[in-house]
Image 1 (cartoon, one colour):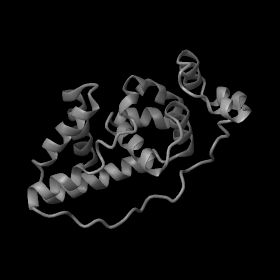
Image 2: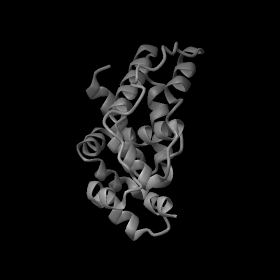
Image 3: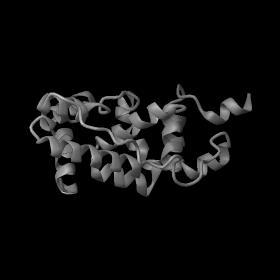
Image 4: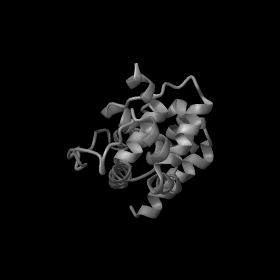
Length: 181
């Protein structure tokens, strides 16, 4: 499967389902069931590569500010959620993690694992059996350097749009407030 085909499938699902991320997962699953077993596995490989592109400290930091602390499982769900928004969104967030704020209308779906098992479920539906999982080739740690999110001044400088969103949504806990108490 070419990258272009992968992104066509993802972006078509988002176009059909719009802002309903749960529905995006359902549309993706239906489409994956139409693929050959090899194509399903290739789709999974591309999805994991797209996730890896998001495994960077600045993106992790922006997501933590907006969504709260993220363990590994929550981080994978957030990466899946970003991937589900398509190629342009991934590039936009990679270019400047502060752009993650643009996905906040859909923030309630960010931590939900809508996408984690889709390819396996599709493969089982098509073949009656799971595909072999080779194990992650992902880096052990996000690329780059983690920011000190308890430092309000540097956080405001690094993530001005995210902090403006937090300022407008006072119900979201700020990490620098936790450190001050």
